[in-house]
Image (cartoon, rainbow, N blue to C red; front, side, top):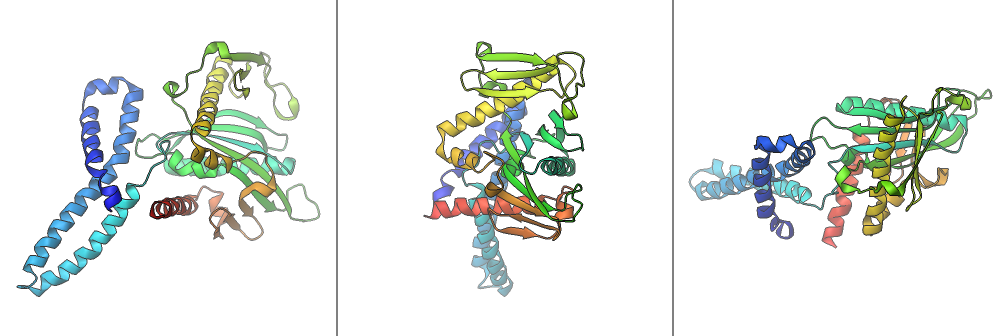
Length: 357
């Protein structure tokens, strides 16, 4: 605890400052600032609460030890308090580990079909439904920013924004592990011989950037408009409402055609562009962030898989942490809690191991 305890007074002081700021009605006139302060308050509150519990337990332990020679019941209470203090110290140590600064942010998820043709597109659609159901369970809000369906109901590509209604219910902290190649093993609906096929879809998870985090010079943008298309390339709009935004300095290209108006597609495209540019800037500035991003999808190649969805065995496997469960049907219906908790636990243990080395 000595290595981390030194940060406590600073964090408690910051908590008091944030608490006071949030009580000022003027702060809530600035929605972005209020949201940022609310997220920070939600991050600091558990630290302050556990620290207070720990101080109280230590005080109670001192009293129990003083009274133990006169009353045996206090000796038993002291033993229980020692165990409780150990547990609280462990919790506090975890809370004081370096946090991902993006944990409190909302998320943009891009799901793309890869190897496997139409079967891959159908699997991409299944992944989309899984995330939609998970978000529904969490009480999150989903905005579909772009959607490229296929003739058979699959998804060639789909981009969604996932946001929380509550400051203490961080989306990135839970969905950041989803980036990478997801592999499926099943008998496709188009397979007449009943053979199991393997295909893959890629997921790119990005923390959504605030306007102030990424400054984009309008002169650096090339914006092209075109007619949106549906499955099979058929035109679904009689006007040029689809938008392609190119950030010339980086060569980053974002296309949006889901909305009916050019303005809405442009706004959606700028949200995705800001998120991509923020992720790229973080990669350049921080090699640790780069390592994390590199685990995400580069090419949708089955050999780079992070997870396998095996339908015949009703099994889901996450290859990064050796997680395996036989409730694939429930997971695809949005029951991701156990899997995400296991990934978060492995992340925490890795941080603790790094601290101890």
